[in-house]
Structures are given as C-alpha cells and as structure tokens.
Image 1 (spheres, rainbow, N blue to C red):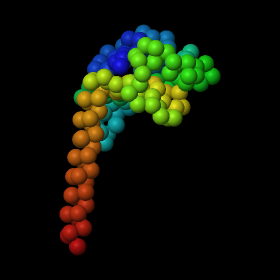
Image 2: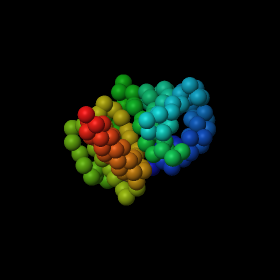
Image 3: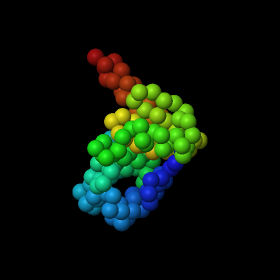
Length: 152
C-alpha cells in the first residue's frame, strides 16, 4: 500500500506538509487559515481546497506527524471504476472490497478508495494508538460518570 501522494507522505511534520502544500499547485493552500487545532484530541488538522482533479484535501496529525491523508476527488473529472482499475493493476487485489470501499493494506499503511470518490492513506500504528486512547478516554468518562451518579 502506498504511503504518500506526490510530495506528501505519512510521517511528515506539520511544517513539512505546509511547505509541500505551498509548492504544489494541485492544492489551494492559504496558510494558517487552513490549519485547525482539534482541542479534544490535541491534534492538528489542515484542510484545503484542491484544483484540477482534487476537490478537497485533509491532513490530520498526531504527535506532530501526519497520520491521515484524505483526498476528495472531483467526480466530474474522475470515476470510481477508473481509479479502482488503476489501483488494482498497481497494488494488486484489495484485501477487502464492498460497495462503499476497497482497501489495500500493508503492515504500516491502510490505503482505501471510498464512495463518494475519496482516497485515504492512514498510518495504521498511529491510528490504532488514537483508537486505544479514545477508548481509554471513554472508559475514564464512564468511570467519572458513575462516580458522579454515586454521589447522590
């Protein structure tokens, strides 16, 4: 499974991604107005418009490193079948396939083609850590809730 698109790859820092976005005409990156801080998760998100075949792009960071790259493609210029055929020729048969997504996976990366026309790159290790952290946060919230209720 691939881990990068053009000059942007999983594991890059926020500053490296910002610099790559500035240099690539495919992205209509406006600088800091396109950067958000997600307060509940302490993560950074860059969201920008695209041009040509790209409608929008999302870059999610954890620990200062890119771990999710989402490309929303222009359905007027590209179609699911063409991408699926090209990806299968390049990466082999997907490890899973259903009407909403096709997934190619390696030990480190989950690469998917989804409907509507979206391509996602996910660092599996960091994603699993985030999921586990989220589960731990839910457990803590549940415990706090039970303790609060127990005070009555």
